Length: 113
Length: 116
Image 1 (tube, rainbow over the protein chains, first blue to last red):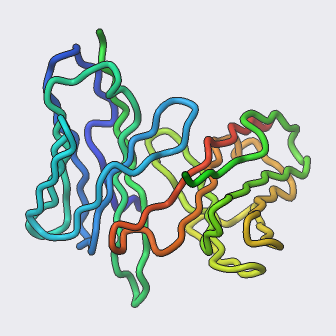
Image 2 (cartoon, rainbow over the protein chains, first blue to last red):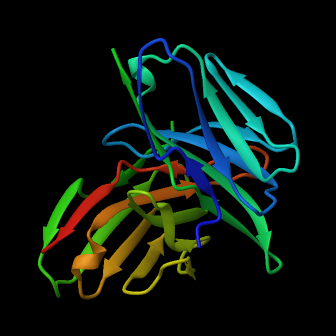
């Protein structure tokens, strides 16, 4: 059972458009991270959110952690071809008395020039 | 900068072969991880190690084993490769626990393994 579901799985948009990617779970996370993975490379951390309702901005990227800490979103404004890649959320949660760290299913974004 | 290197970018093996995937990190990190990455499933943890000669099973350890004889090196072993082990394998390392106080895992570029 995948605890972190991301949607959409694939997204292809034109340069300049806005988009939102979602990361959802039925579990409560103590923290949530977003990574971007470019072709031929490993994932690289973009941001960490830890407080319910927290919003962080990284240039044209806006990350939000849900109030109940069960979901998160990534919004990209005026997407550029350089934003192309696989976006992964990852979170830390408590299960059976032990903290686990898991990755989401991923959203593959392609921005067309 | 943290650097995590993996011994091969691409590997093609036959069913039943023994396969070794090597990973080396240069930042003296305590923790090392092996994941496999498949479309639509994200990254799934195979094994991890939090110290030399220590190992813990992840979520999908079946068919794999690991070795950590030195702090900087973590090897993934497929004792008898099968076609369902065709995948992208990613190695990662971290100093602390990912997700705690912004700590992250640092990843290598991956090894794409094809088992025929």
